[in-house]
Image 1 (tube, rainbow, N blue to C red):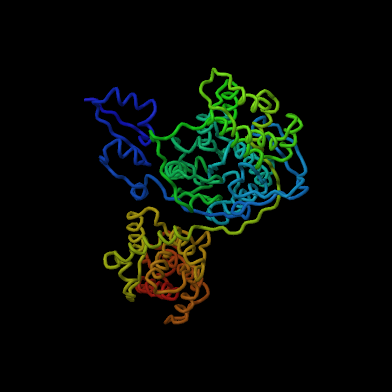
Image 2 (cartoon, rainbow, N blue to C red):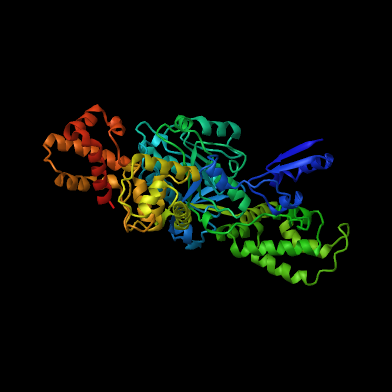
Length: 600
């Protein structure tokens, strides 16, 4: 028996590989894909053997989940305008020749024309600047703010030229963070025009100096860069398959030590960020029809159309197509270039079209390419026989890239509220389903006057993470903050992120027992002062200082006995024995109740 396993089967069942499958028609075939299409389902007669979801892969620790951060700028959302006397760098899409001009008229451009017809360097620079500013202030607050070790970042650009513009702005924005200049390999382009792409991808994966890669679609599929932690979309995507593949570049899990080899200031990769600077996460995607046999052949482009007509292919369909293409050039083309065409050709494009429009009505029928077709040739020859004029028309038709540098502003930014809502609903559902099963949850839910111990909290944390590795305390906290727009929720400071008692605060908040969310460790002194004021014996300054350190340790870890105080050192363990003797463990429990209750 022959067994064929097809990887990426949503596309590999077509093209040249289809011939292989036809040749081995009797073989057993298994298809693997993360992005199944209707065509793939049809090919396998809807025989789905296994369904392993992305959520399953996150729970199993194979992948990590994304967190979406949206940046909206005015120009990205609404477009802009080239004003009179603005300096414009005008580049031909065909010849790549560039000239710097002063705009003679006001020209508006839409958001969809951005980075296709008009490049605004300020818009690119603003997005890159905001990304730089949020790396350590918002995204990775727990890391040493070292810009030589920013998280490995992949940026998707509109096209190769857009990629170059992004790289130039990255160099400008990040250079001031380096005393000796930006490292040579800090940012690089990985596109078809950038050289050995496989070698560049290998370097991006392993080279500590290489922090940002800019691509179009080359790194969108079939690449595995596990240290990658940020994916920035500066181009929109309509294909559901391509979008899933693109954002999937950041989801690969990596061992902590291996991550640190690539990013020395990192701790672990338990999620990745999608920085959406274009709105790609906010609209529906479509499934492309890869094998549509009824799809019509594309019309010839203008260059091919000139060639066909010049060789006598003067049928009505081609002449009408030419008329429509030239009309578009005349109405939407660059005005200065149209004036240049008039000088080159000796007639304006509008006048040529007027004459052609009248003559088309009286053309005799077209029968064969080998006939004279004199009337048709005479109508078209003024353009078809003028090589320079045709070249000018091709340039007008292809268009020009106009590069400007006019101010842009951020109109909104932040994490996705919808994503946070879904995340919190899942977390709260878990708490509700386990409120009678897990000891710490049972105590909090029923508001029992029972001390929550370190072991209880450790067990709760372990069970939560076993259920979903993405339910890390700091991540839950941030999602509550996003969902509630920060109201009543205090941000965790760097030294508070790992406190085990944060779970108590989160669970109380989730069970609606408190209207605010704050870390217990931050308010431990209030509980300690109440405890000290009600102590049966007065405490001297030395004892007070010793107990306050223990109080903070309890506020971080939950109620502890003498044995569990060992990490603090023998001085603290022996000190509390000297103060309370045989009652030391009871006093520790009493202290814990004051601290945790006061923080409620």
